[in-house]
Structures are given as C-alpha cells and as structure tokens.
Amino acid sequence: MMKMRAIYVCIFLLFTATVGFAQASADKRERVIARADSLMQHEDYAGALEIFNSLLEKSKLTSDEDYAMLYKRAYCFYGVGKFEEALNDINRFIEKNPDQQAKMLRAYINQELGNSTEQLKDLNELIDGKPENLDLTRWRASVLMELGKYKEARKDINQILSKEPNPDIMGYLGLTYYYEDDPDSALTIFDKIIASNPGHVQSYVYAASLALEQEIYPLALEYINKGLAADASNTTLMFYKGIALVETEKVDSGCRCLTKAFQAGVDDAGDYLKGFCYGVE
Image 1: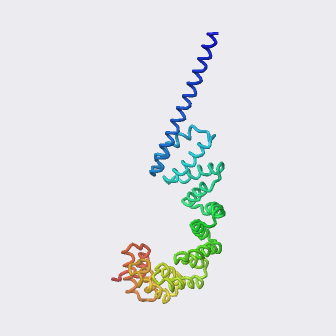
Image 2 (image 1 turned 120 degrees about the vertical axis):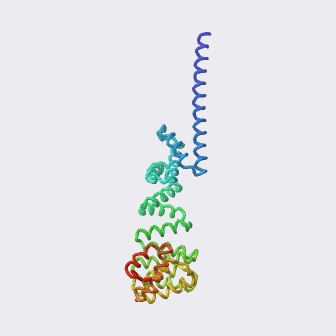
Image 3 (image 1 turned 90 degrees about the vertical axis):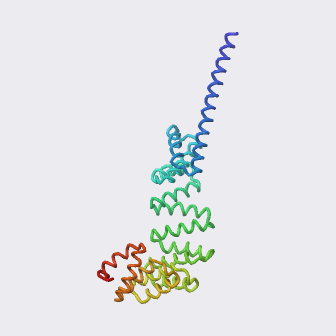
C-alpha cells in the first residue's frame, strides 16, 4: 500500500510539474506578446515584427490567439512598407475572420500596391455595412475615378455633396466630366465653384488646364489671371500663363513666366523654355 501511495505521489508531482511548466510557458508567451503590442503602439513596427515572426514560426495557426498575431503581423508589415507580405497575412486572416476591420486594412494595403479593383471590392462591402460613413464614400469615389468609372464616381460625389457641400468635392465632380471628355459640363461646374467661392484657386487651375488642353488660350488666360489675383504665388498658374502667352505669340512675357515657374520648381516648364525661349533673356 505504501508503495502504491508513493507511485501516486510521484505521478501527482510529475503532473503538477508538467502543468506548472505549461503555465509558465503560457505566461512567458503572453508577456512576449504584450511586449510586441507595446512596440506596435509606439510605432516600432520592425521591432514588433521580429517578435511576431518568431512566435508565428512556432505556431500552426490553431488558435484565435494565433490568428490575432497574424493580423498584427500584417499591420506591422504594412507599417514597414512590406505590402506584399502584409497582403498575404491579411488574406489568410480574412479567410478565418472576415471582419470589417481586417477588410479596411486590406483596402489600405491594396491602395499602396495600386490594386484598385481589389480595393473597390472591400470598399463596397465596407460601405454596405456603414452607408453613412462619408469618408469611405470619398475613398470609393477616388478609386472609381482611378478605374475610369466616372458615372459611378459621380453618384458617390453627389451623395457627399448632398450632405457636405464643399468646393473641393465639387471640383472632383467637374473632373469626372473633364476626364470623360465633356469639357462643357466640366467648365460649367468649375464656373459654379468660382462664382460661389472666388478664392478657391484650385478651380481656376482645373479650368485653365482644360482651356489649355482645348487650345482656347484667351479663355485659359482669363482663368489664370483671376486665379493669380487670388494667389499670386501659385506656380502651376504661372506655368500655365507662360504656356498660354507663348502659344499666343507673346513670347517674351511667356518666357518670363515660364522661367519663374521653372525656378520655383515646376520642372515641366523646362521643356517649354527649350522649345520656345532659347536665347530669350
């Protein structure tokens, strides 16, 4: 009987030691994860990445905690600019947990990778879940414009304008017509912005650019001069003025404007200087 008790005691001690070791190991893992989380909060993504890499190498992605680390590693990869690795991790996470936060991160990653179509898929789902979120609607409108889906972009832009009238957003509405080769509709919108917000310089830039593209140089100069009256330091308008002047054979004045623009950092002015102003003081 004593011998049997001794055996039971040994088994109990061995079991207790094993449980204690496992608990100690789990506690250590939690401390390590907490350290990685702290590094993430302080935007030390490279440091956190080292920890998550080490932990995930030993993991077989069998627990929710493992998948939580996979999400965090995707965020860290995004933070250090390793977007392909980030996309790989977030895709694996979403297969298990298709939540909105993860899809938002994937949309940001695809934005960095230039994957507009994939961005749009996630944004559509996110907006379906939060149709009142105008920031998401703005984002989707910009992606739709990148994809050349101007009619769809206009729907989003008009929705935003119905709730938040804004000259910048209205300017994007004009650009959808501009890029769709409908200059008359675009100019109508730019003129509306200028009439209600005469200090909105970007509208003069858009309108002048369109007029230059259509080779309507006197109209371009009207927009340019009004824009420069609102902001004399606008180098883009100065560049455009140089183009409009040399194209209307006012070469000396045009070259002076192009020189100012080039000296202010508008590199494209250099080509016009070479083409029109060689030898002009």
